[in-house]
Amino acid sequence: MEAFKYGCIVDGEYFCDRPNLSRQLANYISSGQNVVIQGERRIGKSSLVRAAISGMRGQRAVFVDFMGVRSVTDVCNRMADALARFDSEDSLYRKTLALLSHLRPIVTVDAMTGQPTITVDAAASRNPASVNAAMDALAQHAKDRKVCIVFDEFQDILDVGDGEQIFALMRARIQCLPRTCFAFLGSARNSMLSIFLSPKSPFYKSAIVFDVGEIPDDDFYAFAKGRFMTGRRKLPRETFDRILAFVNRVPGDVQELCDAIWQASAPGDAITEALMMKGIDIVFAREAGAYATFIKPLTDIQLRVLRALATIGGEHPLSGEFLRLAGVTTPTTIKRSLTSLAKSELIYDIGGGYKFVSPFFREWIRRRI
Ligand SMILES: Nc1ncnc2c1ncn2[C@@H]1O[C@H](COP(=O)(O)OP(=O)(O)OP(=O)(O)O)[C@@H](O)[C@H]1O
Ligand SMILES: [Mg+2]
Image 1: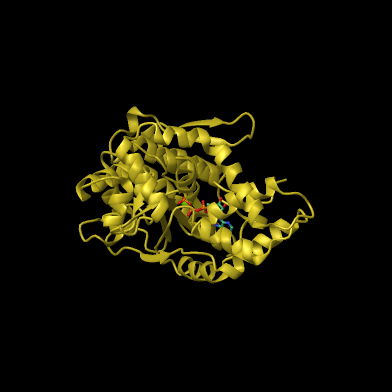
Image 2: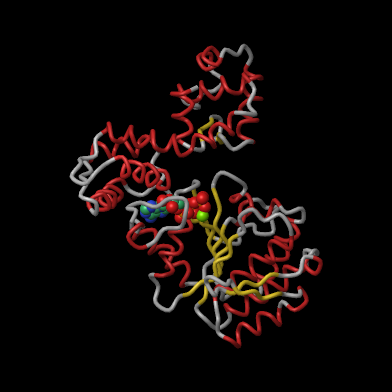
């Protein structure tokens, strides 16, 4: 069994407790306060919400994930599907299907897991107003019960052609449910905050902003040390501090690197910096194909800018030193390359500067390109 998990929602022994954040979040949810949960990618937003809710007595939640939605049908399907997973109680199930009837829902059951899925008809759910039926079905579950509704990757709705209209319709429905708590999750890096802070948005000032930041180093160390101990490996604090610094304290990346180090080590080992380097090589080997695909479409200048960024960091990408290192004469050329690299999601804007999305890709560029 693996000691570390990454790239998925974690719980139980794979989840480092965040008691302060969980308590604060639980307080908002139990008082019915709508809340926007935002933070960096892979910082632990989705896992934290689940942990906070599962720690509350009698509290349940419908989890809707809008990741990658591209059409109104997708948006409706995600809500319908969340309901299919939420409750198998017969009467409620029938009510859900009745509320969705305009969207011509089809129920299928996974032969392997026995898990039912509800899919709505694409032609019947083309219009943004279709979202109303799905919202009503959700509301039915939240009525008179301790059920909170969690909208994960909420900002992805903006990628739907009628995104703004869908938001306005959702907001109108949510306003009719003052006793139901909604939690909206999204990444700090994109439009999440503007949805709630821009006066032009239908969601303006409709929820309290809750920031998920880093896990305190001491807590994270105790957690990681315990995980390594399950395989009789000793994790010295200095090595863990190096791991934290290498991945900028992002929990998902900490777990990814620890998993690779776990593979590189054996029972009885102390985790040294040399093992950490072996771990990084394992990550490179796993990701080599993806990295090659990332750099294939890049121009020579973009590649040089990326290398400069990996070497001296992206705090001052228009400085003389950066230009010299990238072998570029004008700041406009740098700016253009950075914008294009950010569009490909290899790097992201940190307000004036830029950072690599993945610390592993950064290191790979620094060492191998
Ligand atoms: N409390 C935690 N303790 C240990 N590891 C964690 C914790 N929270 C998150 N992680 C690590 O980060 C990974 C991503 O977690 P999660 O999906 O909850 O983050 P997220 O912020 O929702 O990410 P995304 O931005 O991709 O939606 C997990 O697979 C796990 O490796
Ligand atoms: Mg998430």
